[in-house]
Structure formats: C-alpha cells, structure tokens
Length: 348
Ligand code: SF4
Picture: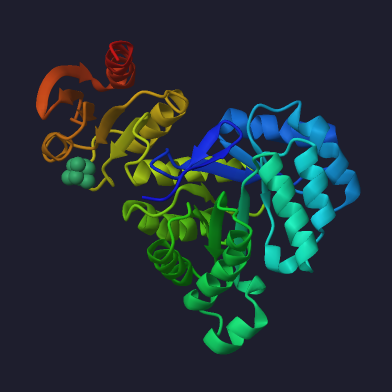
C-alpha cells in the first residue's frame, strides 16, 4: 500500500478512494473566470484542481481563488521557486514542482521549509519532455528514464526530510505510461498520480486514458488521476468517472448495459438507452439496467442486471434476475421500465 498524504481535506494514497483531478485553462490571474471554472469542475465531480502559477500576478491571485472555492487547489510551477513560496503563503493545498529544476540548494531548502510550515505536499511530475538530459542519454526516452528522473527529484526532497510527496510519470505513449507506473509502484511507496500526457481531443484521449489508467487501476496502481484532454476540462471529469466505473472502482451509478442489436432486434434499443442514460446521469445509486433487443437471447444475456427489458414483436418483456416480471405493449415499454427502475432506486 502507498503512504497516505493529505491535500486540503482530501487524502491521497493509503487506500483512500482514487481522487479525480483536472486543471483549469483560464488565465489564473483572472480570478472570476478561474473560480467559475473550478466551481463547475467541482460540481461535475472534480476532487482536486490544479492551475498554472506562471507569473507573480497568478501567485498573488491564489488567496482570492482559494477563498472562493471548496476543493483543494494545486499550483503548477515550473522553475520559479518564489512563485511556489507565494502560492503556499497564500493558501494553496499542494504544489507541483520538480526540485531539480529550482536551482541552487538554498532555493530548494526555502521551498521545502515553506511546504513543511504550511503542511503542503509536493508533486514531482516527470513527462517524456522533462526527463533529465543525462538520464535520457543513458536510458533513452523510456519508462526507466521517466522513473529514474522522477526518483532523482524525490531524493532531493528526502535529503531534507520531506516525504509528503506524490509522483507522476507520464508519456503520450500509452504503453510507456503503463510500464513506467508499474516500475515506479515497485520502487517506492509514494502515492502515484496517473495520467497520459498530451492525450489529444475527446475520444482519442478517452481511449488512450482508458487503456493506460484502466490497466493500472485494475492492478491496484494509482491513487489520484487526471484524464488529460484538449479543450473544456469538464470533459476530463466525465471521462475519469467513466474509467473508474469501467474498472469497477465507482459503483454508485446507474449502469445501462445493452446488446449491440442484430436482425432479431424488435425495439429501438439505441433510443431507449439514450433516454435512460440522460435520465439517470446524475443518480449516485448502484443499479444495473439491461436493454436487450429480443426475448430470444436478451433475457438470458441480461440476467446479471437488476432489471431489464427484452424486445418482442408487439409486446416486450421486463425481467429481473433472468425471470420475466411483466409483459408490456411496446409503446408503453419505456414508461413502464422507468417506473420500475424508479421504484428500485427509491428503495436504495
Ligand atoms: S439480444 Fe437479441 S437482438 Fe440483441 S444482439 Fe442479441 S440476439 Fe440480437
């Protein structure tokens, strides 16, 4: 098990639920826009939010932002140690900075002293583009190189007795991301922030992130996650949720399973599924609903569900646990199914 660290009021690692992270894309110093986006992300299910602190204006804005949002915040800082210190003094919950990039030891010490004083954890984040040159000369742009580079930064923190650390190693290459995290999980007990970097637009990112993060999560690797997606960060949250659900980690939702449809299909499965998905999108209770195109195979194949329907020529079956519990005219099928689903949900 990984060690547990605290970011604001959220725990990362040590068996805590996998937290979902995202990053704002507003100018950080535009407090109103940034707060608005953070609150929208929180509403969508984001647990921890990061924003770039890339200049003194943004570092000064941290206080105004943290005072107006309800989730822990992370300052993303590249080289300027003073920005890290200002962000921590202004109430940031966590800092992403690589100590090997800060400069001389006195600066590193100043950041670590400040982090200790304010109980702020540090995330070390190494991507393919930020592997130390000597390490990439030795290991190439490989999983080993990502890990060795990250652990070098960690060692600097450890030298100063600082262990409130989260590590991320990310590549845009899915397999390399998986491999690097597997190696890292064996080599240390720090909590891991997992994600694929530069994963692309919507569907491209969702597939890459599902393969990489899904592989890791089902193996028990990963304490906090970000689905990196070009564009509106809200989509990152929806995607992260879908991955956690597909991995069986998040069970608090209405899962709609449906058959692919074929020549035996008697009802408009696609339309029924779309309507059910929309209706139950925000329900946080566990229920599995099956929508199957025919009674020939549907009832048997859908027997794992709590309730389901299987299409017939004029009348369709509603079933539970593989047994028919009602037969209804096709024009009343959706409404009857919804009524029965609602009854089951109200019992939970
Ligand atoms: S459940 Fe019936 S309609 Fe759906 S794919 Fe299977 S055989 Fe075809």
